[in-house]
Each structure stands twice: as C-alpha cells, then as structure tokens.
Length: 108
Image 1 (cartoon, rainbow, N blue to C red):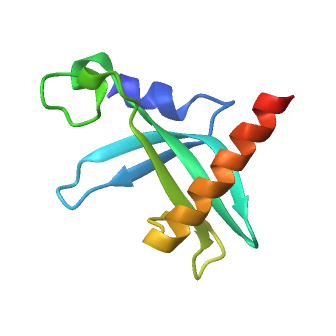
Image 2: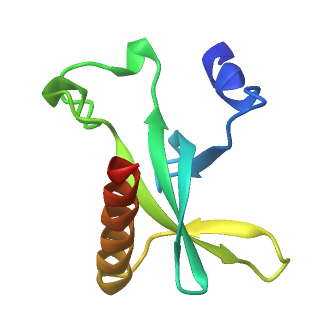
C-alpha cells in the first residue's frame, strides 16, 4: 500500500508499527518521550489514511478525538527497543509526568 510506504519513509518522524492478533497493521508516530524515573514512555499518535476513516472505525475521528496511546519503551533480549502496554500504575505515573510537562510548558 503506497500510503503505508509514505508513513514509513518520513525521515523526520519515528513511526511505530503494531500488528494485532488478526494481522492488521497500525501505524503510530512517536510524538514525544516521557521520562519517569529510570523508565521511558512514548506518546504515540495514530497515523490514518482517509480511506480508513469511516463510521465505526474506532479511532475516535467521528468524535474529533485523536488516536493516542502511551507505550512503555523496553529493551528486548536482542537489545532492541520494544513498545509495550504499561500497567495501570505505570500509566498513572506517566499521566502525572505528562501533566507536569504540560504545566511547565504553559508557564514558559
């Protein structure tokens, strides 16, 4: 698919590919890294083509919401970065850290 190629060829963006249990691929752009203690989390924003937006597509576009997720960045056994779902407790810590970053930026 040409559009997927466009996503992956963007030299300035870090694009992450996820594949669900049905083999469907989803692409997210790494918007920012949120450090929490010694761990790092990524704020990922969904990349969608126009044809993917339809009633019930599930990305939130019909509500005007963006498709945004938080992923924990871990090293796998090969030393490469992987993005995994954080626990509820980790998510709460990331949310607090993100809110603090937003508050700090608003003060500047």
